[in-house]
Image 1 (tube, rainbow, N blue to C red):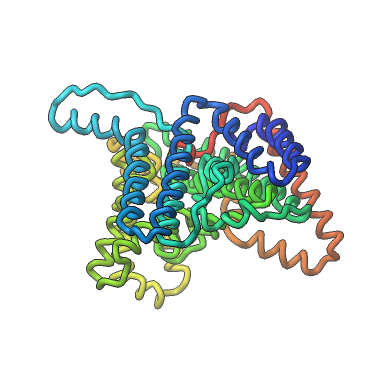
Image 2: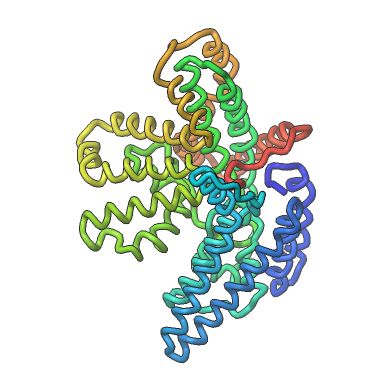
Length: 466
């Protein structure tokens, strides 16, 4: 089941909301656990067992670490932590990378090892990182072990963030799991955020995706058309993923949870370093806290810092998928970040603001091309079209003429300008008028989005495949 479906919006969510708010508080986590499993199992019921195993596995690991810690048996606690990390990575690695490894071994050695044909369980990359962060934080003494398996199960499986994040660290919601107090104002704010995210996905991301798919399928696009396709994908992935994050955060608010922000207008960045502080913040934070800093971070000299950055970005690329284009994408950003750490950031700080912004835009547009095209020959051909051949033709003009409105919405909508203008206008209006206009605006976005969804085909979010 996906958020951007009439089944979820008109049946599943209203049912859960009604039952949740009439349910006694002490039973609400159990209710969320049951419906989260239903949500997950709607399309892939067999993979519920893997998620349940991960949940019980790390629930027990957390208790075991706490047991050893209370008895000051450090080796035992560390052994359980190693078991948790190795076990989680083994499960993730088996489903995500086994066939990739087999295919590469066959290609390299000329063998004929049969691939297993494994399908990647939806959300496994996200909930695996969540449960690992829990056991690591218990080991570090940052959180006590959760003794209630229902509460822990609700944390792992919570449907608002289960499928594609944000990656919610246990320590950020531990209080909410046991002590949250829902209220009408926060629930209303959450529903508004949900609708805005839905609009991003349905009204902008899907339209950008159609442009990208049309251009990517062309055999010989002009340079301008190829760049238009790359820009369309750049907007698609932003509005798709940030839209999902908005919906997840909004649903969290509706049920009393406070998830951390996952995006902060990344396309306004003036350096690649700044871009990755603003894009998929929960993933960047996870790698910083659980990989980069344990490796030494920037505390062991410049050379070691650069090596640590390279390791983190190789792993970041692999986390996104078992394909060499993701490895290339990770290496690409590692090189850019290393260049910025060594000298480029100092130059960008002195340059006019627009120079840094243009440089960063070029970097992430090219980066998304590496990300989007998994076949290396197709990737090379597309990059060739972007930098050679005829500049433009009638196709370019036709696409711009047909799609100028949604492109304009995307350009403006990916910046903080709409939010700043709305907040300025709200300050000048009476609260009742402001609330009324906001309600009307949200209702319009919801109705138009549902109209687009009715009769539409299945349109999952891009990050579902990771």
